[in-house]
Amino acid sequence: MSMSPRKRARVARGVQYVLLAAVVLVFVLLADWGEIRRAFFDLDVAREQFPDVITVAFKNTVIYTVLGFGFALGLGLLIALMRLSSVAPNRWLAIGFVEIFRGLPALLVFIALGYGVPYAFQVNIDIYVTVMLALGLVGGAYIAETIRAGLQAVPRGQVEAARSLGMSQARTMVSIVIPQAFRIILPPLTNELILLTKDSSLIYLLGLSIDQYELTKYGRDALNESRSLTPVMIAGLCYLIITVPLGQLVRRLEARTARAR
Image (cartoon, rainbow, N blue to C red; front, side, top):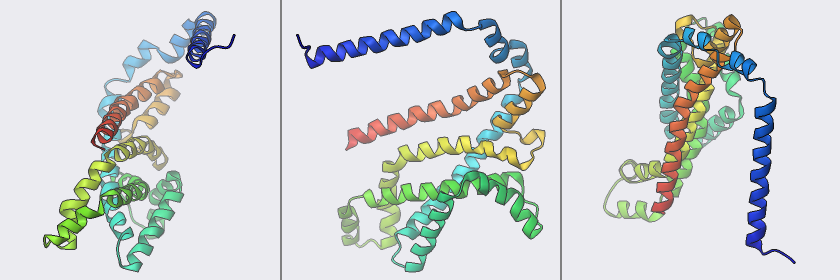
């Protein structure tokens, strides 16, 4: 006797629950919990990480991310407007920028700005400026495409209505188009902020002093000193403290956008 689609779905879900429970049970029975606690959750090692992991590494990670995202947002808006410009050279420059920095790994951009530019031009660039430029250039290329899509998603009738009221093209863009576009693109912009938070870890390539450490560099050095993975777990937890609320914000913004549509 054949089962109905609803009954087959219930059976399939039941099988999945059983398999999941079996995997968890096997892991619980076979795992060496003493070794896991020593390697990942050593309380003595964990206590040694505070307060430096917060006052230095966590703080610097937030600062690097905010600097990079702020620069990326401003640059991305400029590039997006250039992409939509009626002046052909502006469009060519914008397209070239997007293709270059969207195609290059962020790692190479950090190396170029951290070592190549100072060596080529015999200048010293502050570490915060280097991080801001590296994250901003890479993030700006992605944000520019996001903003461009948002600008083009604003109904054409809004622009025509504003122009019919006597607004200039610039005033229409600033007062009508850009505010509506940003409401549309808030979720993907928040996702880009999460990505830049993680990309800030690439600063470890630049040879940091202790007071410039971010979470990844701090966790790796503490791992080498303690021979325990506990510092890495703490660094990962600190990243989650930043990214999980941002992820929740993305979902709320997406739900609000869906309701509005």
